[in-house]
Image 1 (cartoon, rainbow, N blue to C red):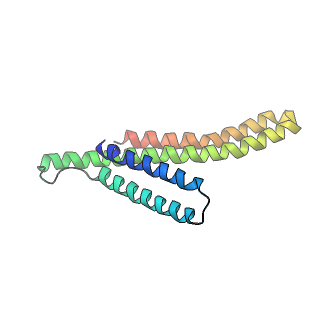
Image 2 (image 1 turned 180 degrees about the vertical axis):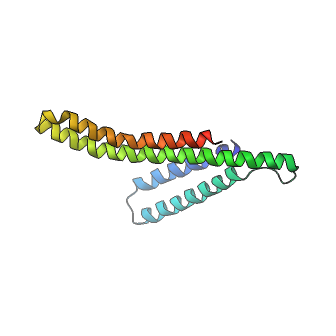
Image 3 (image 1 turned 90 degrees about the horizontal axis):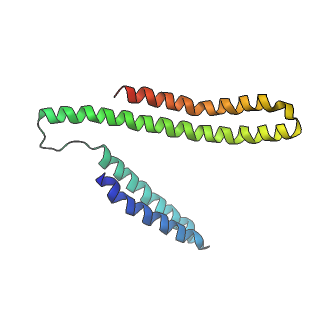
Length: 141
């Protein structure tokens, strides 16, 4: 939680600086935006390292074993989050294209409604697969 309290103001300031830079129309804007992106990447990498570092250096063996077991649990939770996020983004892209094509086809031939909804439903199934993977990963913690 402390890592987020430290990183959140930095992320907000970087977002505000990027937005202010993009309003100007000068050739140096691209360089500035790339510098801000590099700084954000470095900050995100630092936040990731702080969040994933576990346990204190003076912990005894029992505390270390507990920290290692909770570390594997947190890795499973991060994996579950990545599975859900990736599947949701993929499903959103797939539904956007198939939904637009389905609406275009139905405007010309309304009898294609059933077929079009099946295709859109198959695209939405990608998100369900991500959810199933996340449930399996969370169940193993």
